[in-house]
Length: 277
Figure (cartoon, one colour):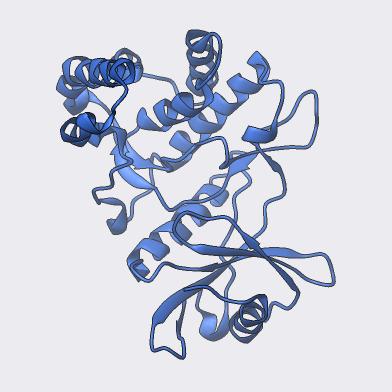
């Protein structure tokens, strides 16, 4: 189901008293729109997927508010309160379909994927961002966080039955090796690892940077749809997997990012052992 910019304008004004120009944004699950008011204020207006539950959206909202309240220097979007003092609005469309609506404050920045070069200093700051997330979320809890999602690295073994789908022999061999490494060196140690709610999606299009071309700060992240209760070390592992991709020296990337993470949230020895697998 798609919506015109005029329909989005009407919904934002009706439920959140936000009026402005609308521009569609990309999104894997939600429909996302940038709304900019005449006064220059910007918001992300979100129409949730039809299968998304209120509990999931409440989990995301609560997590964003918790991260902001932790005062660790993170810049995080925050839910806007709409009519009836609600942050999640239920709307029935003319075809009878119910959708949940939210508006979030806008966090200015550019995504990590657009930054060049990826200097050791920047990579360490990305690791530090992940460490701040782990530190801030170490005392956060929400019932909806306890769920199974395929993007949880601790659950990676489900991919074994799908290895046959990798047609390229060399790539299949590499994927099989990686999964066996996980099975041998990570799975047996999972009971020894700390667990917490994880942001779980520090990829190169969710990590925000400042506009300084030479020494950018890494203030925060966007998109909380993959958050889950899992092993804490996964926060760093996911970020490394994305950032190390296509790098000439991925081991150096691991070292630089781990250094930044450890400075903000000290690793335990067993966590360091399972980080690579």
